Length: 378
Image 1 (cartoon, rainbow, N blue to C red):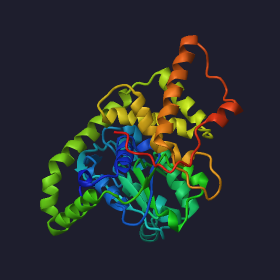
Image 2 (image 1 turned 180 degrees about the horizontal axis):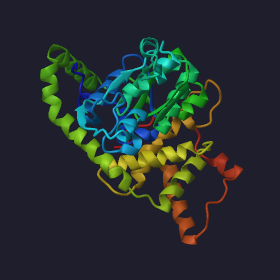
Image 3 (image 1 turned 45 degrees about the horizontal axis):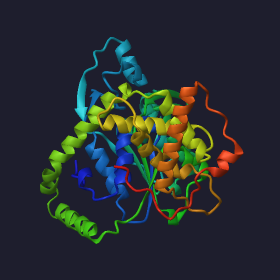
Image 4 (image 1 turned 60 degrees about the horizontal axis):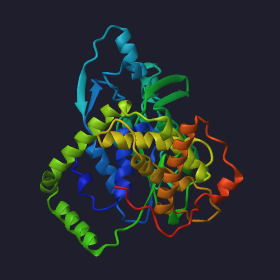
């Protein structure tokens, strides 16, 4: 397996790294979209994340990387093997990284009838697609804005459900398909339709680092990696192992992370203040905040967890006019969070339910369009 640039050696891009780590802790979040100019490290970060993920325990001989410890999630083939009395053993493999080409067909993505088996043996057998190959790893789509809309929609559906259902050509099959979906794009080459953009859980806008000292550090590290990939990786291996251990611990802790009624009211108040339509943003913020808390080794949410999640989940969901570039002022986000927190505490004290948002409240909500982008939230 080729050596990839270490995740912990990436200079700057804190929001990008946070979004990828949160999705690694909770792959069910629903995908990360990275928007940015050419040469800003989008694909480097995605490949580095896959190499960072803990190795997988899989059912030996399974084409879908089924987890031997979770039989309720097994594919149709593993269920059939177990039903026939076979004892399924385990083996360990690296977390997969699958790069989805723009020219991929729907059959190549979801899987289809194995024509060779059908012709030679007269047997209908399912041929796995890229979704099966990416299960429990990273599925990366470069230039996702140039991919056909129906394929993007399909990928987001599967990423959200964690299961790939296939009904075609006389084949009925299902298998688990839980992966970190990462898409990247250059906005200069066209944008995603708003309906698809909203379905990405987290969106990060990346730009080249402007600090000359950091730019020099980027050059220094990349030259060192090109000259001696193995030596460079060995130098960063302790930090990679430490971060990998944090991800493993966070995955185990995630289900135990508690949230209070005040947290829910705070998130609802925050999305209401910004006039966000629908409820997907609320759920994404809650899940991302829980992943952030788990990554930090905590069992309950804090306001900072909600703030970090909102900074990644809200900007692309703000109402905007056509052709308008939306940025979210970080100070406005902090102020809105504080107000929502205060309001939620007041509702709890009074024992009242959250009132319906009024038009006047919507008019007073912070507006997008500030020239400042969201800085890291530490």
